[in-house]
Length: 390
Image (tube, rainbow, N blue to C red; front, side):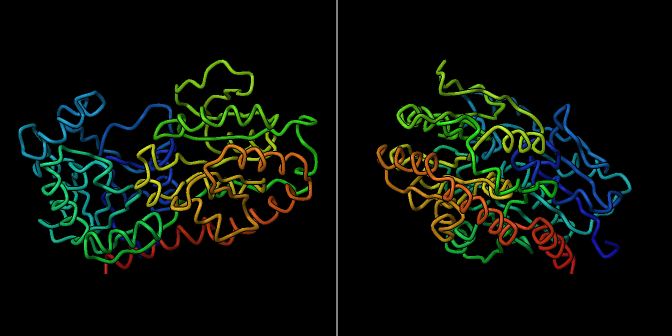
């Protein structure tokens, strides 16, 4: 730990124990020497745990436009400096006596990670970038501005000394699109997650009914696809429990139980106690999410596997989570047919076969420990920072 560099995080995604990217960053850095970290980015969300390092708020002028129907217009205007952005002077004022040796940013909101790049380049500091989603899709602009946006993204990515991509597919895509190589850093699951006993999969929580849990966002096409799946749940005599903070409504259907949002570790304990299996699903090509699904890696999958429960994956073959399941046939039940009858058959098999549920639960836990061991992923991340510092 003494060899780790002073780290300046300049990013729209900042480490906090909330959800998605901020939670992953929080887990990666929770054991980092806190006096060696400075976080510069948006104001932290209230009610969520933070690192014990210093957080310096740096909010993008007119940032509220990004949360309205004018968001695309705002991003487009900002790319031509018709809206105010960040200045290096305002950034440097937030450092105080802190002397960074490495700059870290998540390539999600361009004004933030472009600022990190500008600062690192001006100060001749190494930059490390994390790519969870394709940058061009995170901050879409009008088509005639795409070349300008892409040019900036390529500048940032190429300048970075370490480029940490969420999947092999993302790394390979950016290798071709940006003409620069990167490394793969899978999402980091909770170290407190423990697989439940395999014997828990022997009996159903409710006799004759398969209870399936879903956790996470209902946006990005997921809520829409769940609506398509509800008739399948009814036909298969299965029930769905949704653990999410999103307000997306699936209707007042007795098939669905809304379980609300809780801290990640608490949610997983509830899922293990209340569900027979967990589900990961994707929309089909006509939904318009094909590119996102083919590059992004679902952070819920490593956690699903760590539960030691049967995992059901439904979606097209190009989706990264589906590809992982197809490459590990014993660790998840995978359905790639866009056919409700195929989904119903998968539900029935899980409901009727205790041996299948136990086998999937056992292999899921083994695969999770092998492919997504938290200590291994964190070690890869820290090694990347040390190598960047040189």
